[in-house]
Length: 198
Length: 305
Image (cartoon, rainbow over all chains, first blue to last red; front, side, top):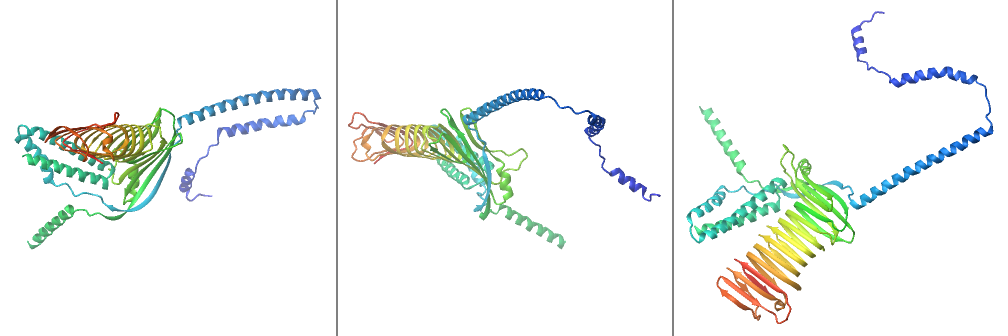
């Protein structure tokens, strides 16, 4: 019969998955084939009862082997027990039980977003300008007082930037913004003291 | 011509509107916020010589004691945001350490945003609950947040910045450093030393030996009869010393650029009484008594019943 869609058939055949049997399979078949004549020969062999002594001898030997085996097993069990003991002792001494980590989800009502109005550019200018004016205009004994106020202001500025860096890493929340507000008030007091000296 | 004028005006209006939207303040409103909490529980066996070392950030730390020879730690990491996906993403940035290295048990939390990762948008924080034997030495560092320690009887060292610190019924060697964080103590006894800046200190039922150096703050002390020795040095700090029977102690008080206010009917001797410098002493009639030495610069001293 003539095949009508030869190309399609060939294409489909080419797409069929190929299966190559395991090497071991051939070896097993060969082994079974080789055993067949041996089995035939075995059936033809004459039957013969062994004497009682033979069985007794075999039993004796088996018994000794069993003893040897159980002795080896006991050694392994003992070694394992010692290892377990050491492990348990180490575990007890170090006490490092693995951490139990759980995650939970909840909801709450809260004000969002938590923000402060943006800093006033004029304020920032004053914080820069007043100390600068003071350093250039005041002479004599007031210098010491100004130096004290300046270090006070530096400390507060540093605290503001520490708090801002915290807000950046941990997100803005009530206590952090409250901290900023308190620092701003203290900075304002220092600036007022500085302005009074001008 | 008219058309282009119309387009120009529309653009102008749009710009104005955009400007108004951008500069208008964002008003907060009550919103449902998703809270993702990750809890880590771990127990360490305690042996003599072990020390607990805590380094918290934005953490609420609670340390208490029990009779077991164990240190039980529960750390809860929190992320809050109205968008659950954001809270879930940002909790991954909040990391912790809870491990023992030789004799030190280290507990720590910190924020780590991977390179090219999105900046944190959620509100992150941590809480620690640590239960340990009362004799276990503790070194506690906290940057922002709050710490509360109770019933310890060993060695306690605290280094706080922007963190409130509370201590109740703590004995032994107590060493506290703090900046921008108020300290509240009740029933402290032992060898106590504090160095603070911009932190108010309030100590009730104070016993033992106490040495305080404070700058820019208010020190408020309520002494017990078991106070053995007190030394306070204040810089731009007011110091209040309270006791129901102020004559129980001997005093040596110095205030520069400040005043000394004393209880009536007590015979203090003024060694110096200038407008900007005052030195006052008092000795009880008993042979042995505890000394209260307070000196302040740009601050005042108040002794009260």
